[in-house]
Length: 212
Ligand SMILES: Nc1ncnc2c1ncn2[C@@H]1O[C@H](COP(=O)(O)OP(=O)(O)O)[C@@H](O)[C@H]1O
Ligand SMILES: Nc1ccn([C@@H]2O[C@H](COP(=O)(O)OP(=O)(O)O)[C@@H](O)[C@H]2O)c(=O)n1
Picture (cartoon, helix red, strand yellow):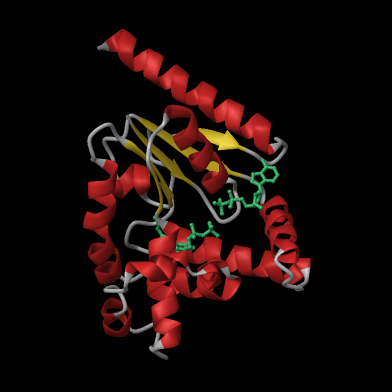
């Protein structure tokens, strides 16, 4: 079974994808980390994120970089959304994600274009959303726990800018697949959101079994 989980920053897609992977005993890939690895390499090498040539040359990163906690920072997230607009960057990361999705037994992947581009054949597609303010509050809290002090206003502005870039880019924009199931986590606890996601997956799989 392939499960695609897409959605904007701090909507809760990673939390849900990890919980689904545990529940259904499937491997999980956080595809945002790949774009973050490219961004981190661009920053370290002092490349220009707006140059497609520079960004592409950062795509052959060593996998150990994926473990670096710095990748989770807002700085790297912002540059990730800048390098991810380049079609050649997306192309360089495509095969790895497709292979992961189509491994025997299936997988759970979360990102922005899993249901539309990476695995349009996914058995279940979820599009996770929440209001920008609630997402900003979650990210702000997350940063505070990491000891990073920043204002809620700044986090909200960054989230809105990233949403705008991700949704407006011409190549693989962040958009729900036509057959995606929407899951609004704005007023759900983590536990309630995960239970709802499991219900949606079970429901879609039962529906598929009936029509098979
Ligand atoms: N339903 C929820 N209610 C409250 N906090 C949540 C919820 N879902 C996720 N979070 C918290 O919000 C932050 C962002 O969640 P995460 O799953 O990493 O989002 P994403 O992968 O979409 O960026 C994390 O600190 C996470 O624990
Ligand atoms: N499948 C994906 C995953 C991430 N990305 C890009 O990578 C950036 C970081 O993604 P992420 O999923 O790690 O970010 P968060 O949602 O965790 O904040 C996003 O803002 C997107 O620009 C993408 O374009 N396609």
